[in-house]
Structures are given as C-alpha cells and as structure tokens.
Length: 243
Image (cartoon, rainbow, N blue to C red; front, side, top):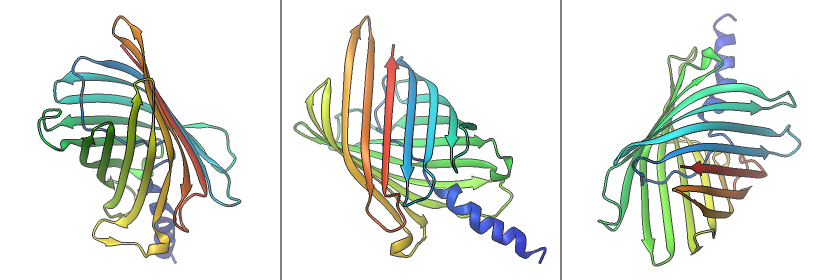
C-alpha cells in the first residue's frame, strides 16, 4: 500500500505537469537586438462542468544579443474555484539561428526553465525548434516543443507539444489569422487519439507605434477543443509594451 500511494499520486500529477497552460502563446523565431519589453499574458479554459482554469503572468524581456532574447516571468494561477495564487517563476530564452529573410524558413530555438511554487514538481524545462516562413502577406509559424520536469518527486517522461499559427498581415495595427495548440503525450509513444489535446481558433494581432521607439504589441485568440480530451473553450491574450 505504501508503494501504491506514490504511484497513484504520480498518475494524477503527471497530466498537469505535461500540459501547457491556457496562457501559452505561439513563439516566433526572430529577435530584436536591444529591445526591452514589459509583457502581460493571460488565459482561461474550461471543459464541460469542470471549474474554469485561469493563468496570468507578467514579465520583463530584453534583446541581449542579435541572436538572443531573454525574459523573466512571474506566473499566477486560479483553479478549482480557489483564489488566484502565485504559481511559478519562469526564465525564457529564445535564440535566433538564421538571419531574418535570408533563407526560405527562419529558424530559432526556445529554452524555458520554470521553478514552480510546489517544489514537488521539481524544475520544468521546455525546449524545441521554432520555424517561420512567409508567402506575400501570409506568415506561417510552426513549433515543435518538448517538456519535462527534472528533480521532481515522481518519475516522468519527456512530453511532446506543438504550436502553429497562420497570420495575414493586413495592416500593422490589425492582422488576423488562426492559432492552434496540441499535446500528444510522451515524445516517443503518443497517447491514444482520444487522450491527446488539440485546440484551434481565430486570432488577431497588431502593433501600435507610440513614437520614440515605443510600441504596444498585442495578440489574442479564441480556441475551441478539437479532441475529446481538450478544453471545450479557451481564451488567451498577450500584450507587450516595447521600449
């Protein structure tokens, strides 16, 4: 019985460890050297009659090199109808691997390190390649991400996630398109089809320049579940003040 209880706890914990939160966003591979930003992200998702899950984060980022953008977040979470609580600190690093526009596909690489408030979860690390290409005014992005918790109280495997978006660059202040997110389970042994999560929905984007090198950049999406295990509905948004 003593051995069974930790195994049951791990079974309940691992799906949450592997899952990307509702505030997750589509990463792009390009870096702007010298840019500083204050960023706010939020997301909310619900499945059936389950309590709504919401996440919020605020971060400060800096283009430290022509090829490296680094950002530090403080993250908060609300779940199970409880008050919003501090959840984690995250350090995000994006590396631009190709010169913008030099090749048909721009390539970057993402590394995120998160330290949850719940120390039993250890250190959450997510990494993977970022891709972007353009056809006229149409911009396409696709990311392949791997996630694992290290030094956690329970053994866990590397999980596989994906992100994609298609954006029509109508005007700099207002662009529109689609976004999609998915989680497939263990990277080398995917979950059964009904247990995978896929969400997709319309998205808007824009950048409003304020002068003196300052701008407000935004994007938001309404997502619907496209698999039995996915949330029925989700909303996510991201606002950046660049200076």
